[in-house]
Each structure stands twice: as C-alpha cells, then as structure tokens.
Image 1 (spheres, chains in turn blue, purple, brown):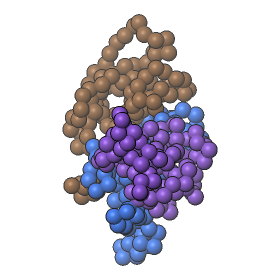
Image 2 (tube, chains in turn red, yellow, purple):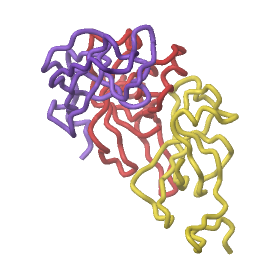
Image 3 (spheres, helix red, strand yellow):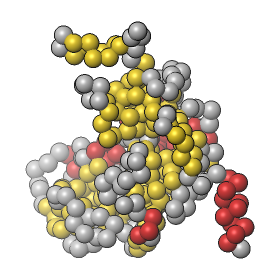
Image 4 (cartoon, chains in turn orange, blue, yellow):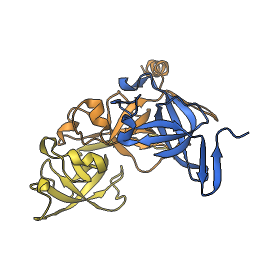
Length: 110
Length: 98
Length: 96
C-alpha cells in the first residue's frame, strides 16, 4: 500500500461486470515528503473516502477478488482505508481525517 | 521482495474490516549500500517488528500467503527482520553492532 | 487502472485460441487532463465495440488475465475494462 490523495472521481457506465455498482476515484500517489509520484490513477473505493482525503492505496493482482469475494476481478487499485495520522521517527503527521475532526468540519460547513 | 527500514506507523480508523487489528508500517526502501531510496511502501506487520528495524517486505499476491495474512486484503507484508547483510566481501549491515 | 485513448485496432487471425473473437486495440495512456503520457500499448477489449478516439480505462499486468467473458483466463497483459463518461477532479488537491 502507499499514501494517496483523492483528487476527484470518474463516471463510467459501460464497463466490465466486476466494476458494477462500485465507486471510481481519481487518486494521486504521494511520496513520504508529500510530493506527487507519477500521474493520478483510478481506484475503486469501498471504505467511503471522499475528495481531499489522504488514503491507503492498495494494488496487487488478486487483491480485489479477496476483498469482494468474486473470482478473478480485473481490478488493480483499491482505496483500502482513510488515514487519520502517521507517526514517523522524525515526527508526526496529522491528515485531518480522524472521525472527530470530520465532525468538526461538517459542523463548520452547516 | 525488497529490503527497507521501518520509518513510521500509520493510523486509520475508517478501513477495510479485514485490516482490523493489524499494524501498518511505513517502510522506506534501501539500496545495496543501505542508503534510503525515494520509494516506500506501507506494509502489514506479519512477524512483530518495531520502528527503525531493517526488514524484508513481500508485495503482491505473495503477501497473502503468510500465516497472519492468509486471505486478508493485504498487498504488502513484512515477513522478516534482517540481522545482517553482506555484499561482496563487505558486511554492509549488522543489527547488533556495538 | 489508468486512463487511455483508443488509437486504432489490430486484426490478427493466427493467435492463441483463447483470444478468438476478442478485439485488440492500440491505446495511448493519458493523464488526468487527457494529455498523452508514455508510449502507446496493445490491449485487448473483451466487453464491447470501442471506437477510435474513445476515452477508456485499462488494467495492466496480472489483473488483465481474467477479463475474458465469464471470467475466462486469457494470456493478456493489458485490457480495457470500461469507457469513461466523465472525469471530475480538483486541481488544488494535487500536491506541488
């Protein structure tokens, strides 16, 4: 898995059956010093991530079939978790994704 | 497989239920002279390692074969702690160096 | 999964039997702004007819083998899995 930031989403109607009723996000991979790594990739979300979230981006052959319980899914990238914070030997990074902080954000928005 | 140093941990509450109870470590990859490279991977701990340790990570479907990660949604797993590394005739890494 | 544009089609009669009836295309990978990125590649397309110029997404390497009809395995390392209708993203989330 790697760090990624959700920058948007992709709409697609004509697709492989394994993609039916799944949300497609556009995710930019991040390096440890918060820089972009390569170009944004598409990923299936099933944990409820949204735009601007720092997420755990998983990618491996056969990973999606383990997650969704369907044999042989042609899916590579998956958003597997929303990261609250990361602790490094050099210090701590807060991503503002923790549940309490989200409540705070929503309250300020309404 | 790749070798790297555990440089951090990741905390996530909203995640796949299959990842519940696992420790997620940030592993920074190293080259043959043990210098850190720019690449990294977030891996599930399958052996019980700690921060600042040199470890071996497997990626892809192999990560789902270990005892602790069998049939779990895992794409990278830490499967060994490195004691020492020898390249050519030189010992480039030793864990218990005085 | 990555974004790509269909550049053209390939016709091959003599091929692995599991590939019979499968359409083969040349695709050009694109970035989020639909600008060309990297070299074109050959990909199969087992779902439906794709027209040249269509924006699609594809899977590469080990995930592409299971794109045959009814999950049948094919000796393929890149396969189109869907057509993109709409891409929405915010530039301010892109770092750097």
